[in-house]
Amino acid sequence: MKTNSILWIMLSIICMSFGHAQNDASESALDIPAIIESYITDYKQDRFAATPMTFGIEVPGSGTWNVQITGTQTEEGWEVNYSEGLPSTPTFYYSIEAETLRAIHEGKINALTAQGKAFAGDYTPMSVAMMEGFKPSMEEYGKINPFSFHFWTRGFPEIIPFGEGMTRRAHGSNFTVFYYEPGLRTAWYRVLPEERVRDDAREQAMPFPMMVVAIKGTTEGEVDGERVSLSAGNTIFIPSNVMHKWWNETDSATEAILIMFGEGA
Image (cartoon, rainbow, N blue to C red):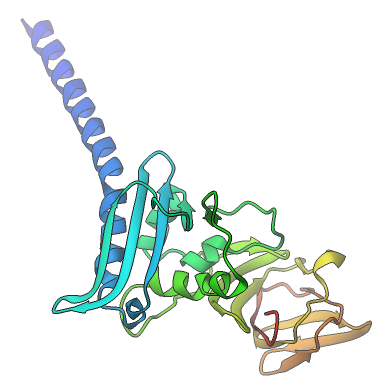
């Protein structure tokens, strides 16, 4: 009898564990649509929803959605409709890995950082793709980055957290993107000891000016062939098409705000 009782208890525990695993898997599958719906609900209160926009969302393994922002104001806020499946009219869509969407939802990373890369062919866990037949003009394409910021950033005023653990890597160090729009790009960089930033010659000269604002430590660099040391409390201006690179010779991480501006930024 005692053996049978033990076997029954063990069987019950296994069944309970299996049931919990099924529930966990079910909750994991269900939370993606709930997260997307939460961003749509939030955007109904966003002043930028006054501008009409149609786009898609794809989360591989979880589904696709069609989002229509009509620009119509209602008693409950701006009208934002959505349904399953990509839009019937070709447009752009976000392709987002499920874990990245959860990380954005939990404030561990922001959407523009998840899309950030050094070169066009680089992998990103969140990307903007064009549906077949959609060829945006430069003006249309330029609206996507600021729209991405406003749609995927909840609340008002919109707050962007940044710091260690909220970054991705590009150009040789860790970064968080703050905001992009035509003529302006802003980001925060954290350079660890012995890391080299823009060491690849292909990324050392940009067709627009920039300013590097040092906020922690001292980073060594070379600008147009001249050796420089950029320490906290100082800002350096780098003209367009000027070669530059940076490296950290200290034992601690250095930090800087990068501001890129002007035509082409």
